[in-house]
Image 1: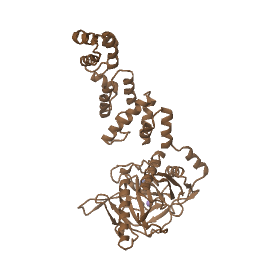
Image 2: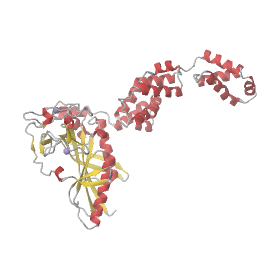
Image 3: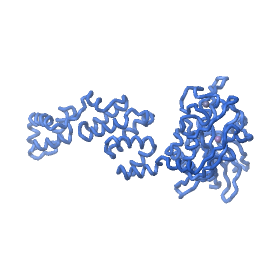
Image 4: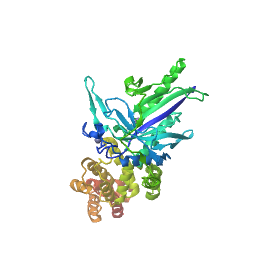
Amino acid sequence: MKYIPTVGLEIHSQLATKTKIFCGCPTAFGGESNTHGCPVCLGMPGVLPVLNKHAVELAMRMALLTNGEIQKRSYFARKNYFYPDLPKGYQISMFEFPLIKGGYIDLKTENGPKRIRFNRIHMEEDAGKLIHVEGDIESYFDVNRCGVPLIETVTEPDFGTLEQVSLFLNQLKELLIFSGASLGNMEQGNIRVDANISIRPQGQKELNTRTEIKNMNSFVNALAAIEHEIARQTDIVEQGKKVIQETLLYDPVHGIIAPMRSKEEAHDYRYFPEPDLVPVFVDDEWIDRIRSELPEMRNEKRNRFIQEHGLPEYDAEILTTSPDIAKYYELVIGEGADPKKASNWVMGEVLRILNETRITIDEFKVKPSMLAELLIMIDNGSISGSMAKTVFDEMASNGRHPKIIVAEKGLTQISDKGELKKVIREVIESNPNEVEKYKSGKTNLIAFFVGQVMKMTRGKANPQEVNVILREMLS
Ligand code: ZN
Ligand code: MN
């Protein structure tokens, strides 16, 4: 490589509070346009914002998990700019005195460890949403996102490869989700990435002019955009021209990087301290409490699953891909299901249906207690493994209890010895030739007899039991 890329990231993450950062409006996604609004988030004259304490606590969790320094005193500031998605004419953010300074995330790259340092993590509110309908001369405004609480994580320009960016984003997302700081739902805009990019010739120490790509809402897009921009800058330099500092947007559909309209760029935000909010004071006691309340992180969970539930590493890895799946699994075994069998079912059938139907585990109709009930029914022989799959699919589609489905479909497995003996006797009596052959040494005919029994019971006989009884009666 002739040029070394240098990348810094700014990541906006939505904090998982129920209400907005400065008012009581809900943050819930998917509400009808302009139903989550009030005079505060619309910035009406005379209203006063009140800081959501829980939002501060969620931001503090991220500081503790990334070794950031929580400031004893921080201030909100007004970032002034005019844009129709911002009814107040300013965004309440933090500027000179952010809540968190420093911190880092350590990566394990293919070329060894790499530390990505944080400059800061500050709190701010989100803007509203503009909706432009193609062919329509009017645009629409939705207040619902106005005042949704965000943290903005600003890294140092420490990234030198796309691998590092990718590892970092995934690790940050994992921290956000497992700490409970954010739902981390990319489709709902919970995480947005801006990137600063420059390139310099091998051997040159000082950084060259950088550009900024804004508002990438998926990691795939972010990586593609950074890759494109490195290539674009390389082309410019190769042609003997200079990269100019500008803000760019990446169009993932066409794979093009283009400058933002100058109207969307505002370099002078005329920041000043927000006069309507008092400083945020944090003492050690509060920090200690937040530390003691930190949820179990993925590594801890994975190790515990191996030790406590005796799971192989592979299972523990998959079951801890999200805290929700891990929780679901533990509820299933909490209801008495065998840990390894429960793991197989959650990794296999449960995740398969979630993937196929693109629903969350909360929307999944098979509740943990129902799956446990099904697994226990397999274990005590009242249904077979293959019947269980049928029952499970039905449970997933209509949410009914396994016992009810089994009873209605007459799927109960026959394990009763007396009942099985009756059927087996009939099979033996009506196949004298095969019995003769079996007795003269063709013992693999056992499969034929099992088949006949299964046929007569319409697949309901417990095959293990049938095998045992058949061998007994044939000898
Ligand atoms: Zn509001
Ligand atoms: Mn921001």
